[in-house]
Length: 494
Image (tube, rainbow, N blue to C red; front, side, top):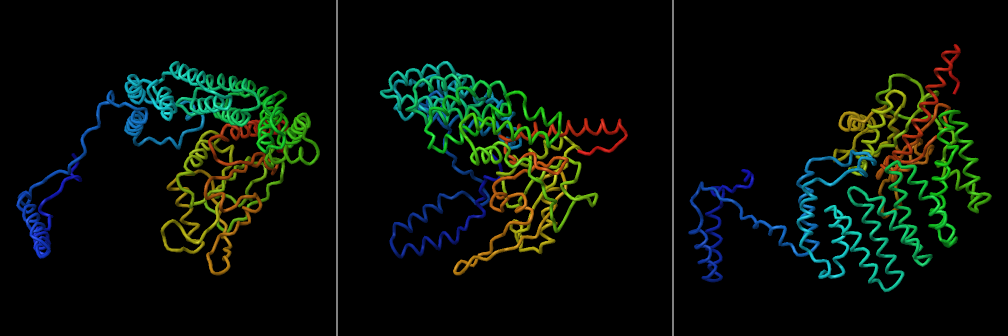
């Protein structure tokens, strides 16, 4: 037992306790006698005693319900993974991760003696989760079939299948093949479970992006197309679903926009992607301004717009006086915020991975603004806050790239509130980034060597694969263009 948990009886306030007992004797003899008894039973001064800790939990084999077993699994997982940092893993690494052997063993021992037929219905979901952790996938499938056979309506069967698909996709590791098979069974239930089918295919598509599995995405595309044609056109989720499908079809079917980016450069890439996106939108029934808006804001997400130069009041880590984004360079703008806590750690790790992968071929610029305070320190001046941010992002978090900081104009709310709120900086307005957005995530803007946007998104794990592909393609084009220009004896123009 650690010494921190020991109690030194010499620190007990014995005289004070005696006086307290005497004062209470005026209100009755029993309390006084109780206080005297407590003093008499106290150990001698200088002796050490331990806290009374609760008894050890019962053996795993004595747990009689899935929630008790899952609690044991969570305790084991927390013990085994203590000190590890999962928030720095890539999306692909997280999707392919597996449960520790100790966790699987506990789940197997605990689930072996539970009789599913004797469980109340509310325990079904927990027991199914336990089976997946224990790698008892065949038992999971058998229990799902039994529950489906007992379902009394199509809606109930749809809810059961949707829940099972969600469990399979969120298991460690994710069971993509089994989830896809259940999604096909969900399709057979028809349009009455359209909501469950939409949700299932959106989660399947997200996993396919995480796994970077283009074959999986292409296999899903025809089924999602059929689903979109059945769904109610007045439902806004239908538009979202068709937009997601459009992005997948445009990006995956040959000729692919990324191939054009790698072979012909950023400008040709944007023109080709817009033309192919409009054709796909027209094929799905979108025309006019609706199709244009769908392509520009959903498919291209602003790619092709000019990227204005950054206007910073303070610069750190810059070795030259060139504007940023620098002409002829591939630049990634990361809008960082010292107010963003643990939810931004995965994004910070993403920036570090990109720097290790691309090195000097990718110019990373951290874009920040002042807020009139820094953590729990007194309100600093703008220059002091900018200096604190540089030490925080560069020294503490080890983020790559240069940092530019803009002094923020504050706006005061009318009485009786009177609070001061930060306004968007000039850089935020130029790139459509708000202070509220940077407090929760890290918006990213990729600028090509021609000074136009190529990617608009954020530093989430789900977008890492797409972002890396775009950077790979534009860097490959730039390197080949420079090599051709050098051999011809002229400077590269694009």
